[in-house]
Length: 182
Image (cartoon, rainbow, N blue to C red):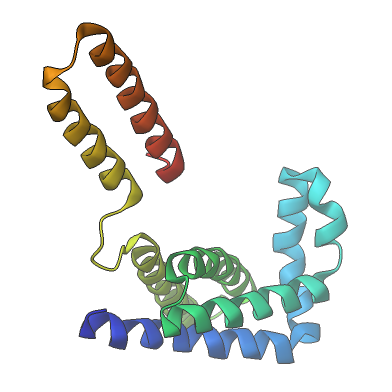
Protein backbone atom coordinates (compact mmCIF):
# COMPACT_ATOMS: atom_id res chain seq x y z
CA UNK A 1 0.00 0.00 0.00
CA UNK A 2 1.40 3.38 -0.95
CA UNK A 3 1.94 6.17 1.52
CA UNK A 4 -0.89 8.17 -0.08
CA UNK A 5 -3.34 5.34 0.56
CA UNK A 6 -2.08 4.87 4.12
CA UNK A 7 -2.80 8.54 4.82
CA UNK A 8 -5.87 9.16 2.64
CA UNK A 9 -8.06 6.25 3.67
CA UNK A 10 -8.09 7.04 7.41
CA UNK A 11 -8.62 10.72 6.64
CA UNK A 12 -11.66 9.94 4.49
CA UNK A 13 -12.92 7.40 7.01
CA UNK A 14 -12.64 9.74 10.02
CA UNK A 15 -15.51 11.94 8.88
CA UNK A 16 -17.74 8.92 8.35
CA UNK A 17 -16.89 7.42 11.75
CA UNK A 18 -17.85 10.60 13.59
CA UNK A 19 -20.97 11.07 11.49
CA UNK A 20 -22.02 7.46 12.10
CA UNK A 21 -21.41 7.70 15.85
CA UNK A 22 -23.42 10.92 15.94
CA UNK A 23 -26.27 9.24 14.07
CA UNK A 24 -26.19 6.30 16.50
CA UNK A 25 -26.24 8.59 19.53
CA UNK A 26 -29.03 10.78 18.18
CA UNK A 27 -31.11 8.24 16.27
CA UNK A 28 -34.28 9.50 17.92
CA UNK A 29 -33.74 13.09 16.86
CA UNK A 30 -32.63 12.24 13.31
CA UNK A 31 -35.61 9.95 12.71
CA UNK A 32 -37.98 12.82 11.79
CA UNK A 33 -35.39 14.10 9.31
CA UNK A 34 -35.27 10.66 7.67
CA UNK A 35 -39.05 10.47 7.30
CA UNK A 36 -39.40 12.39 3.97
CA UNK A 37 -36.51 10.51 2.34
CA UNK A 38 -37.85 7.14 3.49
CA UNK A 39 -41.34 8.08 2.27
CA UNK A 40 -39.83 8.70 -1.17
CA UNK A 41 -38.10 5.32 -1.06
CA UNK A 42 -41.39 3.66 -0.08
CA UNK A 43 -43.10 5.24 -3.10
CA UNK A 44 -40.41 4.00 -5.49
CA UNK A 45 -40.03 0.57 -3.85
CA UNK A 46 -43.36 -0.36 -2.22
CA UNK A 47 -41.98 -3.64 -0.87
CA UNK A 48 -39.53 -1.65 1.28
CA UNK A 49 -42.36 -0.04 3.25
CA UNK A 50 -42.01 -2.51 6.11
CA UNK A 51 -38.35 -1.53 6.55
CA UNK A 52 -38.72 2.20 5.97
CA UNK A 53 -41.61 2.59 8.39
CA UNK A 54 -39.29 2.54 11.43
CA UNK A 55 -37.18 5.69 10.97
CA UNK A 56 -35.26 5.29 14.22
CA UNK A 57 -34.13 1.78 13.31
CA UNK A 58 -33.13 2.92 9.82
CA UNK A 59 -31.11 5.73 11.38
CA UNK A 60 -29.36 3.29 13.69
CA UNK A 61 -28.63 0.89 10.83
CA UNK A 62 -27.25 3.75 8.72
CA UNK A 63 -25.06 4.90 11.61
CA UNK A 64 -23.75 1.41 12.39
CA UNK A 65 -23.11 0.70 8.71
CA UNK A 66 -21.27 3.97 8.38
CA UNK A 67 -19.07 3.33 11.41
CA UNK A 68 -18.27 -0.25 10.40
CA UNK A 69 -17.56 0.55 6.76
CA UNK A 70 -15.47 3.59 7.68
CA UNK A 71 -13.37 1.54 10.07
CA UNK A 72 -12.81 -1.10 7.38
CA UNK A 73 -11.85 1.58 4.88
CA UNK A 74 -9.55 3.25 7.40
CA UNK A 75 -7.59 0.07 8.12
CA UNK A 76 -7.56 -0.97 4.46
CA UNK A 77 -9.60 -4.18 4.78
CA UNK A 78 -12.36 -4.84 2.24
CA UNK A 79 -11.86 -1.22 1.28
CA UNK A 80 -13.72 -1.39 -2.05
CA UNK A 81 -16.85 -2.91 -0.49
CA UNK A 82 -16.58 -0.53 2.47
CA UNK A 83 -16.31 2.42 0.09
CA UNK A 84 -19.45 1.30 -1.76
CA UNK A 85 -21.35 1.07 1.53
CA UNK A 86 -20.11 4.51 2.50
CA UNK A 87 -21.27 5.85 -0.87
CA UNK A 88 -24.79 4.61 -0.18
CA UNK A 89 -24.92 5.90 3.38
CA UNK A 90 -23.35 9.23 2.41
CA UNK A 91 -25.91 9.68 -0.35
CA UNK A 92 -28.76 9.11 2.11
CA UNK A 93 -27.13 11.47 4.62
CA UNK A 94 -26.69 14.10 1.92
CA UNK A 95 -30.36 13.91 0.97
CA UNK A 96 -31.44 14.12 4.59
CA UNK A 97 -29.08 17.01 5.41
CA UNK A 98 -30.09 18.96 2.32
CA UNK A 99 -33.82 18.54 2.90
CA UNK A 100 -33.67 19.41 6.60
CA UNK A 101 -31.27 22.36 6.37
CA UNK A 102 -32.54 25.89 6.96
CA UNK A 103 -32.99 27.74 3.66
CA UNK A 104 -35.06 30.66 4.90
CA UNK A 105 -32.17 33.11 5.27
CA UNK A 106 -29.18 33.96 3.12
CA UNK A 107 -26.82 32.54 5.76
CA UNK A 108 -28.90 29.38 5.95
CA UNK A 109 -28.76 28.95 2.18
CA UNK A 110 -25.01 29.49 2.20
CA UNK A 111 -24.53 26.93 4.98
CA UNK A 112 -26.84 24.47 3.18
CA UNK A 113 -24.85 24.84 -0.06
CA UNK A 114 -21.54 24.48 1.79
CA UNK A 115 -22.73 21.30 3.53
CA UNK A 116 -24.01 19.89 0.22
CA UNK A 117 -20.67 20.50 -1.50
CA UNK A 118 -18.77 18.93 1.40
CA UNK A 119 -21.00 15.85 1.29
CA UNK A 120 -20.69 15.57 -2.49
CA UNK A 121 -16.91 15.81 -2.16
CA UNK A 122 -16.92 12.96 0.36
CA UNK A 123 -19.11 10.89 -1.95
CA UNK A 124 -16.60 11.51 -4.73
CA UNK A 125 -13.73 10.46 -2.48
CA UNK A 126 -15.36 7.17 -1.49
CA UNK A 127 -16.31 6.50 -5.12
CA UNK A 128 -12.63 6.83 -6.00
CA UNK A 129 -11.78 4.48 -3.15
CA UNK A 130 -14.40 2.03 -4.43
CA UNK A 131 -12.66 1.68 -7.79
CA UNK A 132 -9.12 1.76 -6.40
CA UNK A 133 -7.47 -1.62 -7.01
CA UNK A 134 -4.56 -0.77 -4.72
CA UNK A 135 -2.09 -0.96 -7.59
CA UNK A 136 -3.11 -4.47 -8.58
CA UNK A 137 -4.89 -5.27 -11.82
CA UNK A 138 -8.63 -5.72 -11.62
CA UNK A 139 -10.57 -8.85 -12.45
CA UNK A 140 -11.56 -7.66 -15.92
CA UNK A 141 -7.94 -6.91 -16.86
CA UNK A 142 -6.76 -10.28 -15.54
CA UNK A 143 -9.43 -12.17 -17.48
CA UNK A 144 -8.71 -10.24 -20.68
CA UNK A 145 -4.96 -10.73 -20.27
CA UNK A 146 -5.45 -14.46 -19.70
CA UNK A 147 -7.70 -14.75 -22.76
CA UNK A 148 -5.31 -12.86 -25.05
CA UNK A 149 -2.37 -14.95 -23.84
CA UNK A 150 -4.33 -18.13 -24.50
CA UNK A 151 -5.28 -16.85 -27.95
CA UNK A 152 -1.62 -16.20 -28.82
CA UNK A 153 -0.55 -19.64 -27.69
CA UNK A 154 -3.39 -21.26 -29.63
CA UNK A 155 -1.78 -20.41 -32.96
CA UNK A 156 -0.35 -23.91 -33.31
CA UNK A 157 -3.62 -25.69 -32.52
CA UNK A 158 -6.03 -27.21 -34.99
CA UNK A 159 -9.09 -25.46 -36.41
CA UNK A 160 -11.57 -27.07 -33.98
CA UNK A 161 -9.46 -26.24 -30.98
CA UNK A 162 -9.24 -22.61 -32.10
CA UNK A 163 -13.05 -22.44 -32.41
CA UNK A 164 -13.46 -23.81 -28.91
CA UNK A 165 -10.86 -21.40 -27.61
CA UNK A 166 -12.65 -18.50 -29.31
CA UNK A 167 -15.92 -19.52 -27.61
CA UNK A 168 -14.14 -19.81 -24.26
CA UNK A 169 -12.59 -16.37 -24.83
CA UNK A 170 -16.03 -14.83 -25.43
CA UNK A 171 -17.42 -16.57 -22.35
CA UNK A 172 -14.57 -15.34 -20.14
CA UNK A 173 -14.89 -11.78 -21.44
CA UNK A 174 -18.68 -11.80 -20.94
CA UNK A 175 -18.34 -13.15 -17.41
CA UNK A 176 -15.68 -10.60 -16.51
CA UNK A 177 -17.83 -7.85 -17.98
CA UNK A 178 -20.84 -9.02 -15.97
CA UNK A 179 -18.80 -9.17 -12.76
CA UNK A 180 -17.39 -5.66 -13.04
CA UNK A 181 -20.52 -4.21 -14.63
CA UNK A 182 -18.96 -2.59 -17.65
